[in-house]
Image 1 (cartoon, rainbow, N blue to C red):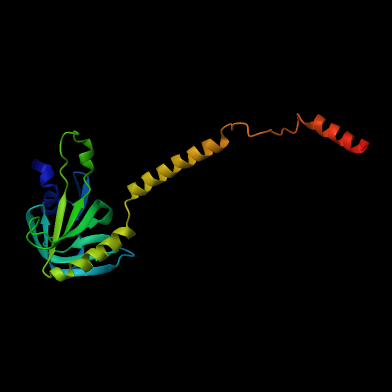
Image 2: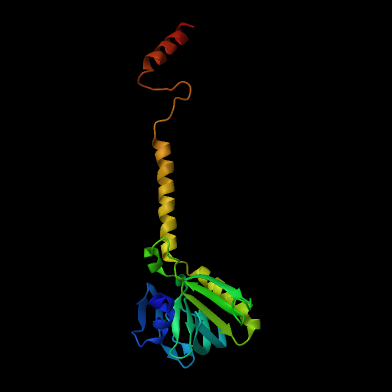
Length: 207
């Protein structure tokens, strides 16, 4: 299954520049930090922090560290640490099914734009992360804050697609409004009906 199977792990573990694109999925490796807290960007705030959180990339344990949910990023401070922008998480959910994973966790699927170029017969390899907190009771709050922050950071591509769709819809409406309409009863045309108006005025005068 090769590189695509381990695409998240290769982004996290290799000694590469701070922002690396792997299989079209950028993960920031080793984000700037102040101890166990990330250095925040302008206007960025930490909304939730969960210490002793293990991170798994597929089946691989990356380590344990504090997970921070900021208003702009998911930042995990285990080992060298990593940060992911919310738009690159296409799905997240609380998983408590021991058949799927032995420990309760926050399961995430990540965007992999390279899958668009795969053959239709090939099953796409979806990048996956699991955040496993030492305190499973905190999972629901973790999920809630994650959802709220994701809503504040929509995928710009989705917004562009929606805008293009709205433009096409508007064009269809305008096209329908400007197209020649079928005759609705008697059509009034001022130029061709001037004589009729004059005749009507004369008739009124005679009366």
